[in-house]
Length: 252
Image (cartoon, rainbow, N blue to C red; front, top):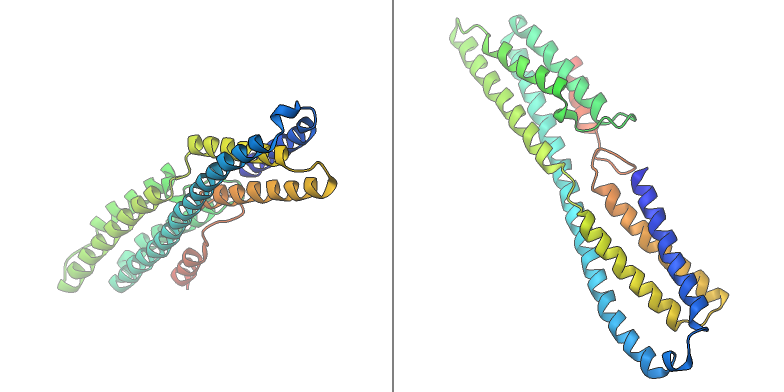
C-alpha cells in the first residue's frame, strides 16, 4: 500500500503542477510569454526530459535485474532443499527426525514469506534461522557406523551447508535497490517537465486530459518500479511455486 500511496502522491503533484501552470500562464506579463522565452524553456526542458528518461530506464533495468536474480535464488534454494531431503531419505529411518525438521522449516519459509500479513524475508526470520541451525546440528549427529551411512551423512552435511549458503545469497539479493534520494531527484525533474508543459500548452480541455494521462503514466511506471523492487511483497512478487513443489514432494 505504501508504493500505491507514493504513486498517487506523484500523480497528484504532477497534476497540480499542470493545473497551476495552465492557470498561471495567462496571468504572466507579455515579456515572459514571448517566442524566445518559449524556445529557451523548450530547449532546457528537452535536456531534462532526456535525463529523466535515461534515469527511469536505468531504474527499471536495475530493479528488474534484481527481481530476476531473486527469482533464480528461490529456484536454487528450492533445489538445495529437495537435494537435502533426498539425501536424508536415502539415509533411512534414522534420519526421519531430521527430515521432519526440514519439512517444518520449508513450511515456515513458505508461509512466512508469501503471507498476506506481510511478514517478509522468509529466511531472515530468527525463528526460521534457529530451525535451520538446529537441523544442521542434528545432521551432524547422524551415525556413521557403515561406509554407506558415513557417505550419506557427509553428503547431508554438505547439502545443509549449501542450503545455508543459498539462504544468505537470497537475503543479499532481496535487498531493495531503489534509492529514495534518486527518486526524489527524478520526481523534481518530472515536476519541471510538467511545469513546462503547462507553460507552453494552450489551456483547453483536450490538453488538460492529455497531460493528466501523462501524469498517470509516469506515476504508474514509478509504482511498477517500486513494486518490483520488493520481490516478496506487494502486487508483483516472486512466485512461491518452486518451494510449494518441493514441499509437496517432501510430504509425498
